[in-house]
Length: 381
Image (cartoon, rainbow, N blue to C red; front, side, top):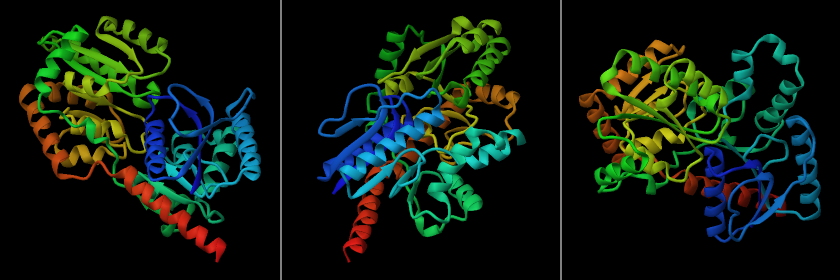
């Protein structure tokens, strides 16, 4: 089949973007012709894929998105395909991969009433309704049961249109047999001494991932548990200035290192003592499972879709809602304690051996083929 994949922005270090890449590669490997529409592309292009860069020039995201959609629709009319797969919410999709949380739930529960009158609300609510509303026939691949329940609540989406996928951790992220030797080497490369405790935060979008919360927790540990000698490594692509200012104000600027977007996150996870992920919003959070299969203990907020795996594996601490900074502070001290840290590592590695945390992209590609094959039969029938 000829397939079109729609994504507003691609950069190498986003979770959505990595899932997008793996889906395209999986379907291309199965012999399908893959075309990608993208307004912004950073990094290496996909081999054997027809990348069509969509020209957008408007000043606002709302207008850029509208330009993107008009250009893509015109191009697809002139050069049709058998299936359109979207990774952002927009009308006209055959299949939507739902990596983003429910917009309407966030707008109603985390914003003031004034927000519902804004152009931004109208734009993104309409885009979500075009996928999940009763008038749509888009089929949806979901990655978290928590978000599936929200979409069903707000849109009464037909259950038959929603397909819950297993997680999709790359098996290559699993801890290797020589993980202890690798840990020593990576820590040495980073200039981290054996006695230092390393907190790791991974993700682009520092506010959403709760970096400010992590810095405050670091300052608490530094002040109240001086023997732990903690350090926070931040791997991700986003603006740093406000977080550097916060670290300076709290007296921990020397303990926070911004590493930028990284290709060696698995190595960083081997070097770290805990993944701290106090996110404000996270539909799933594959980084949690990447830490789990690497044997890295995790402290995470309950709001994250994959947080239940951390609890089931007994691989760290899941912070209950509503978020409280003191609970994060205490959780970090607990997880950095050697005995509990070792228990979490063993629980994580055992869970990674017995659970299917790896087949999302294969299962999703199967569903895409089934959905588009069925629609093709109905069209030609």
